[in-house]
Image (cartoon, rainbow, N blue to C red; front, side, top):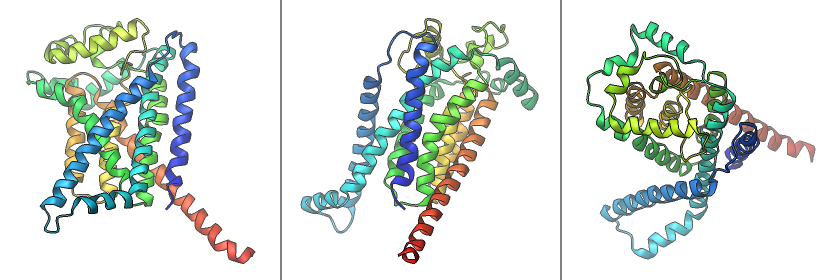
Length: 332
C-alpha cells in the first residue's frame, strides 16, 4: 500500500471544504475573516502534547523492559522511523485543517439553511422512545458528563488519529483515514444543510415553544453557559472559535463511531472500550440537550456507511494498481 492511497483523496476533500468556507463567507453575509492560523496553532499544540505523552509512555515501556535501550539506541530508532514520524505529523496537520474548515463552514450553512427540522426530529424521538429521550436522565447529576463531553471526545479522536497514522499500511488503515476526512468534508455539511436543526437546548430560542424548558433546568450550569456562547455567536453572526449550531447529524457521535471502526479494523483489544465510550457520548448528547437521539443514530449509521464506501474505493484503487503492474511486462 502507498501513502498516496489516503493522502490524495484526503487532501482533495480538505481543499474542497476550504474552498467552500471561503466562497460561502460573503454569500452567507459574514464580514469577518475567521482566524484559521490561530485555530491551527491550537490544533498543532494539542497534537504535539498528545504525541509527546505517547512517546513518553513508549519510552517508559522500553525502560521497564528487560533489554533497556541506551540513549543512542533510542536516537537510532527515531531516525529509523523518521518517515513514519513525518507521516504522522503531515497527517495530523491535514486532519486538523479539515476539521477547522468544517467548523468554519458550520455557521455559514446555518445562515443559508435556517433551522426547520427540530419539530420533526423531536416528534420522531418521542415516538421511538415513548417520551422525549432526555427525560430518562431527568434528576440525575450530569456535572461529570458535562465536563467530559467535549474534553474526552477531543482527546479520544486526536489520540486515535495519531495511533492510526502510526499503524502499518493496509487497506483498512487507508479507508479509516479517508473516512475521517469524508465525514468532516461531506457527511457533516451535507447532512446539516439538508436537515438543518438546532437541537433541544435551543428549541425555545428558535421560536418553537417551551417543550424543552424543563431540560434547561436539568442540565449543569457549564452546559448552559456554553449554549449561551454558541447562541450569541449565532445571533450576532460572529465566526467565533468553535462556534456554530447544528444538531443533525451529530458529528460527536459520527466521530466516536469512527473511533470504534478504527480499532475494530485493526482488531484491537480497545474495541469494546471504544464502543462503551461511543454509547456514553450518545447518552450525553441527549442528556445534555445538544442533540436529539436520532442525530446520534444517523451519525453512527453514516460513519459505518461512509467507511464501507472508503474501503471499496481503496480496494478498487489497489486492484487497478495490481492490474497495471501485471500488464506492464506484457506491454514491454
